[in-house]
Image (cartoon, rainbow, N blue to C red; front, side, top):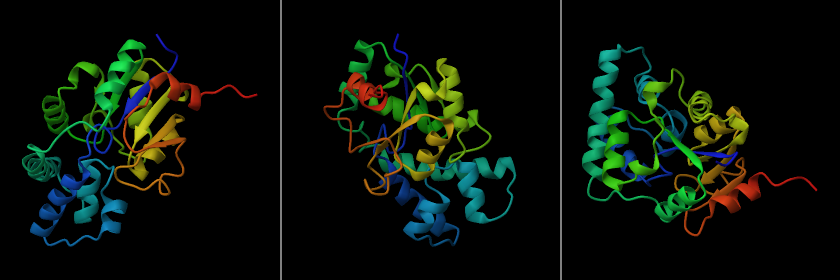
Length: 222
């Protein structure tokens, strides 16, 4: 077993789902009278738990029951929009197969609810690669708080400093860095320039080798 573990965000990393989330968010927000710009979406919604962004949107405290109903309404819109287009990010299947061959530990740490995790795993047939998955129910504080990645590392039995986090959102990058992990930016949601605070940047997983990535991120000093 390697001394390095890998932690994957889900939306924007395992799947390029954010364009569909954006449409669902716009539909949801418009229904309730909110007209958000792209900047507002990035600052108030992307990378956050449903509890966080729904509270941010309505700017008032909501009961757990109302939060759950709003969240499932929006996620139901997302799943309906995405169900015929969903696929794993390019090269991910091959990357995960290489991880199996190299006996590398891995987990998913996501702000998404379990209903979306189950949807993604069923549609992409990737559940076999991820025995450890932490969704939004595992944390009190969403990204940019590092809680999700600290808990993922603990679930895998690794210190965060020996983990590589794959993230597409700025709040997620902040969370990974705050946890003490190496962070690989996946440029699905943000540009390379916007992901400049990461340790390494990829567009997708095509031709990416886990062992080579480990050697780049954890190279010994001269």
